[in-house]
Length: 362
Image 1 (tube, helix red, strand yellow):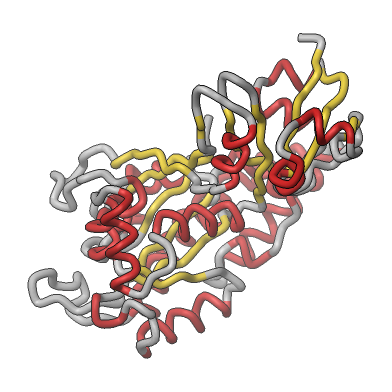
Image 2 (cartoon, helix red, strand yellow):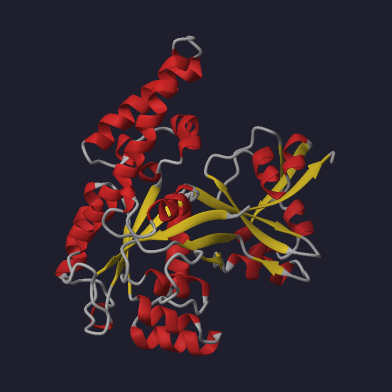
């Protein structure tokens, strides 16, 4: 199952426009309240796929993907059932990470739910609602966790301690991610689906008069994100949604005319991978050249498991080379001849840009 990134924010901030920019879809921002979230698949752009396919003839090029979910807009009081309330929050709890869209553009045609544009206030509103919702979850879980901890079992003791820390953090109105929990600690509380524990990328949705994202509104949001040690990007959702509908030639021309190096799809896909601590490896053969994302630090067997769960258990060895070496030597035979194709075992830590052939017993 692909990674899931949820697009959240107040109503009328441009979430669905950003969704359309990412996916090339034409979802309506005026869908009836209570409708199911918009779901789309985003290809993670990577020119290295075409470099590999140039030297290893193949029938198909397949990009790694991220599933993007545009959840219904949040309103004040969502934590107590206002608006879509718990339905909204349930969608968010299933996500691996969050794109928090914040309105930084003016529009007489699209009134702001709070009547004025104030990105920092809007972030505070959303995060307060999410923190209150998480506080309710943690409060309900603590008694059971404390009883389990009395057994002395190592994980139960650790889980109870993490929940105590999370409760104190949320009670101060701060997101759980500010605790900087380790991956192991996050694993212990994953079943609770704490929204504020998820990694978050702030997206400043700017107007066409501020494509560079240099306005004071954007700078204020940038400072707010930095205070949480969270990344932020500025994107003109309206313009990018139009770009996403163009063919490749027209898209390149429009990007150049706007002074943009790449579309929002590439920016947000790359930043989402960075946010989740992922990097890319490739597989290549006559049927398919494909990119895959795995956590940084994953071993060769774990990378094999990303292709099929049976492959991790059945892993024997991996043959590995670099894309840049393939571009230099042209063939796998030449890579072998020059010592650029190496055999790696179970303890090999996969590197960004590795091309790997897995030998398994499956």
